[in-house]
Length: 283
Image (cartoon, rainbow, N blue to C red; front, top):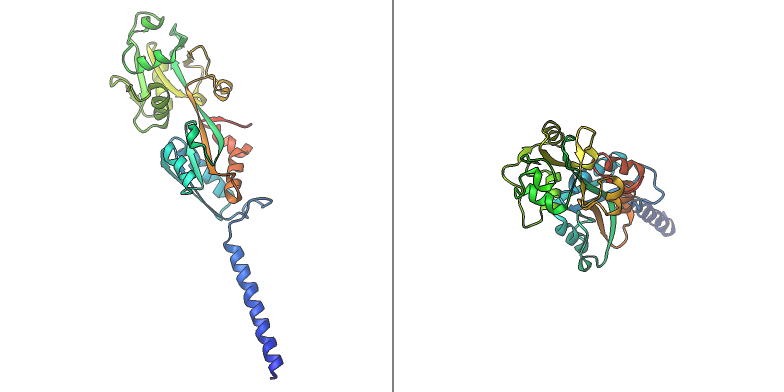
């Protein structure tokens, strides 16, 4: 073999190694998500933050991973403040918050509202009370107002029903209505499901409780709060006060597989999942 032929063989071998390496590197990269067919995305996403948003994120992540088996979406809690910090620090690709951000928390973050959470205050249809103020609701659930006559109803005791500790609906109610200075009365009847609260109120003319807006039916009556009727419209426009946004936060505009996931969440398919328990922000 001549020297010239030997060097030609070395060059060809090197070219083959380079091409093979490039192919392997391409397989390990995260796809951009733009123009990709379903199932062709790959990469990983970490979501952290609000424990109220967490169950919804888990459902959305499962649906997204079913469509894209090469993508891993990890969902963790920690609270809204932790989610905001995780997005700011880059510890998570997406931070989740169930409250509006303070001005000083917004720096460098892109906010995407993925859902709204509305909670209806319900009474028995035979109850003459149809409207309450937010302050009256707080005092009723704190055990400070105990008779319906004190809020415009008949002379009868108020029977309070609440969800169990750890319930996301209870957590939202405590955060929005009770605040940090009041606790739900220990005399309240505790129910372990939305349907159980609704049934308890349906069967007791003197009962009051709270359930997710999407679980309302004709067997109970939702009262107006500060003159506003609970509905998807009033939750979306912010006039119904017992509501809050579910927000995804990214450091800058989302890109790549993270953008693909958020686009899925806002798509008709993703918003259908949202609408099973919450108020969708897009139709």
